[in-house]
Length: 358
Image (cartoon, rainbow, N blue to C red; front, side, top):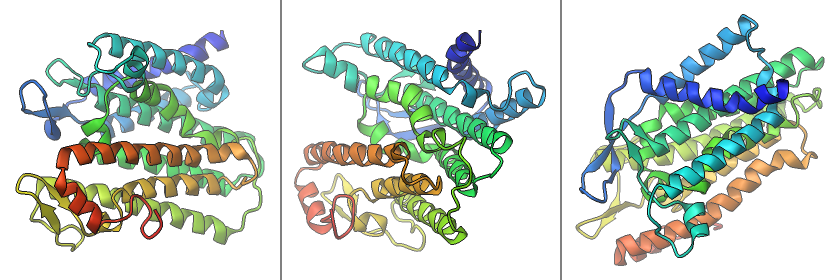
């Protein structure tokens, strides 16, 4: 019975998150991407922060009444992962087969997806908004359950472990708090919805991102000095500043191009049709936000305190592989979109991700 309940736990959680997304009222906002058929800017229902808070409240309510133990997601994490994998595969096949082919092979269609901007009920539910919402909320619930297990089952509490949990909690909250800003990022602009995005958000995101605490939740305090733990927290904060600062600067420039951001007056080059930022965060490298994401992932791995457990490094290694390849793909997209302007931009902003190095 426990196995079956563990398997269907993600299905139940995703259904509840979806229901909350549907019933919690919110205003629609315009994004950056346009509808290929009509040319109109797409509109989205954004209520992720409220869904996250409501989901956490339900988690606490179920735990405090002993209906579902606080530690349930940790104790059934293996079966939950299998259930999420099944859901992710099923969704990927559904969303790909629903649309006509756009790639040379079905494997390419399945991996990258066919539809770029999938919306239901005239934008009432947007596939990308929903996927990232489900992934972030489920990740947060996993983190809470892992922390509950550590606090109730480990005699020598590891402050670094709790810091890693706090970092992941910050990651989830700040993403959904700034949910609208992400409508201007690569995922919404260029990605299609297929296995890579669908399976990624439904199975990979909520379970793999917690890998550092997955393998250390049952381990005692490794004795990392307090100063080192503080340093890891500062490293995470620095990475967050790079990522959030870059995304906010771009968002501000796209929505109010003449306004300053953090006292920085925007400087851009233009061909009369398109404009590209060349100062502030975006003067450091063409994807300074990727560097921030990788830095945060490294900080989470370090915070666990178990540097010798190779599994805790899977998350930052994955980010390096993801962002290096994504940056190359984005380069091709931008060359095609901006033409000669892109050449001028790369001459001014020479580095791809790491200023002065790469």
